[in-house]
Image (tube, rainbow, N blue to C red):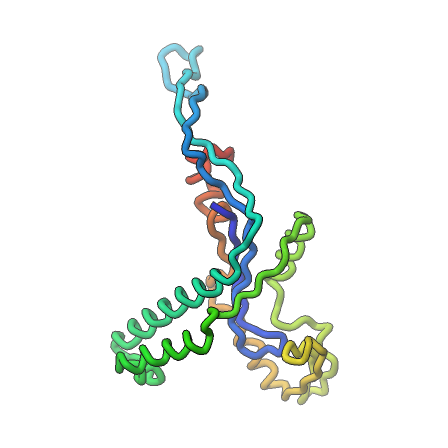
Length: 232
């Protein structure tokens, strides 16, 4: 069971819609050994004799051990990501078509052959799977925490990237990753700039940060950890 934290971003550096998810995954996880160990512990009990507040019990627990990963299956992840995402999209389209007021733009998928052909074309176009960028392992814990803290909740555009403002027009700078990441200036009307910016504000109470495995709410609150023999 690894520790996983995911962060949803809907913007690219040029403020256009570019939905993507960042994950930080522990380089390993907890795994049960398969061998139960016997140990003794004290638990509280109610008794008529108030001097006896604890009693001794013996239990069997399979304590987990940490398994370190030395290899990350990048190519497999791309294929699995593609497979899960396509199946999820298919289900969402089918659910929308079954609704009382389906989206008109999705009505083209009401023909099963059209839906099958569309997703088959995607698989042929991306035969190695959808793009997944895997960065190198980060070994400095404090630097990693600081990086996640800054990056997870960062706004789509920082003030330092705004280079000029005339009232009617606004110029900002962004990295053009299609051109080796070189910096490019872009000018928009102020109202268009505001429209492009505010569409990235998430809905009320929508969680853009989610935790899984050892980082999940159940694990942190202690629902899983006592069973794994981990102190909370």
